[in-house]
Length: 255
Ligand code: URA
Image (tube, rainbow, N blue to C red):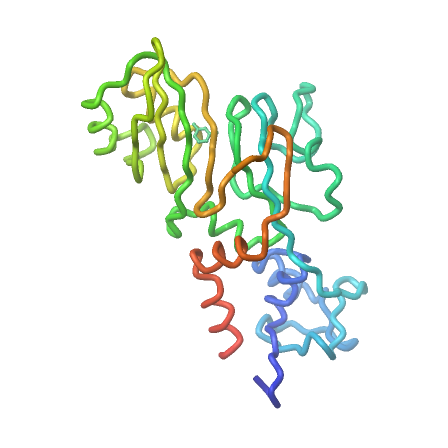
């Protein structure tokens, strides 16, 4: 604070404006591409007054852009890719094409998996959603071949070694049996590739269908396949709090 005003570090301001991630913003600053009030500034920690100072990147003024947070029900048989697929497979890009902001998915779902994908231009939040360090649980409904026994559920809960290291779900429950299929609810807070399928296959049950129904407190809810909606302010607040982001903002601004 200076004279009652909140000053913001230049790199943070650039990332808040959606210009670049904090690391990329540092690069832009080092490369001399960022000006404050007409002068090149090469210090990441340079503090600016967003209401008064004029910030430019490559000669173009940067204006405060608001972050956007959107959730999509990715249907089965869509690639989690922005842009076109060379082989002509459908991609999630087609489903969010009406959103003008450049949003990125925080995590991915396999081509044949479905359910909740969160998109945002808030790089720091996306990073924290995906990083196992922040332990944000992702909840999956998994239909598998065969009758999964209670003993197997107990063994699953203990975790096991996969080819790329130990994997242990935060929780695993048998929801129901149906003829020769079982429905499980599995929670993992990490996002290694095909983690759920690889984990479950180790117990001799082939995954038939995989649907992510929640990312932390954010639920897929009544969205239909292919539909999206903006997160409510309360949802964003809860998510940021869980990911310890409010605290970080305050600390940076107090320094
Ligand atoms: N685990 C998988 O195996 N696939 C997904 O799409 C997500 C988690």
